[in-house]
Length: 186
Image 1 (tube, rainbow, N blue to C red):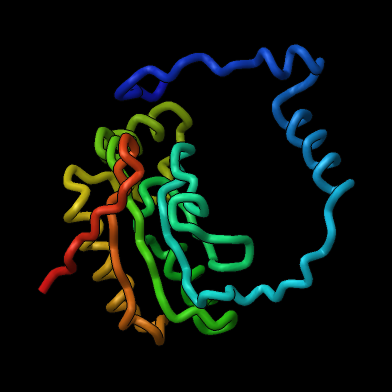
Image 2 (cartoon, rainbow, N blue to C red):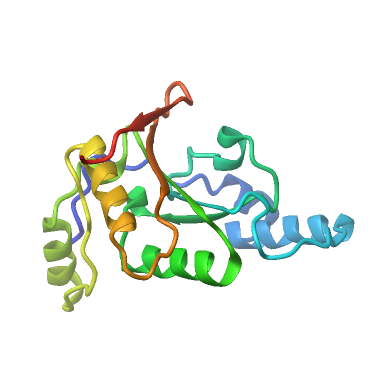
C-alpha cells in the first residue's frame, strides 16, 4: 500500500532529462563537468570563517546562503527534514564544534513545512508497505515555534557540545523570505 501524502506532489519534470536523453543525475553530472572546467581551488580550510553552523530544513525553497548573506566557506550547513535537532544533527554539530572550531548555532525551520502535516502514522504506513519498521522517528510537529524551542533546548542541553551560549532559532517565511526569531524556553 502506498504511503499517503498530505498533498499530492506534481509529477516530476522529466523534460530536461528527455531533451538530453538521460536522467536528472546525468544532467547534474554534465553541469559538474562545466563547473569543474572553470573551477579554481579557493584554498580554503574546512573550518568555517564565521565559526557558525546553520541547521535547517532540506526544503528546496530555502537558499540559505542567499537568505543569510553567506559566502562559500562562511559556515557549516546541516540539513534534514524539518531542520529538527536529531541525534545525527547533534553528531554533526559535535564534529563542527570540537574538530572544526564553530562556536555559534543557528536553527531554521520554515513556514509551510511538510512535517506540519505528517504524523508518526507515516512510519506505520511505511512499515506496512515495506515489511520493516524504520529505526528513526518522523519528528513531525504541529507548532513551528514550539519545535524551534525544542530544537534550541536539545542543542543547549547536549553534553557533547561545548559551545551552547550562542544558539538561536528562527522561522523562515517562504512567502516573504524573512526570518522571525523564536525566544527559547525560559
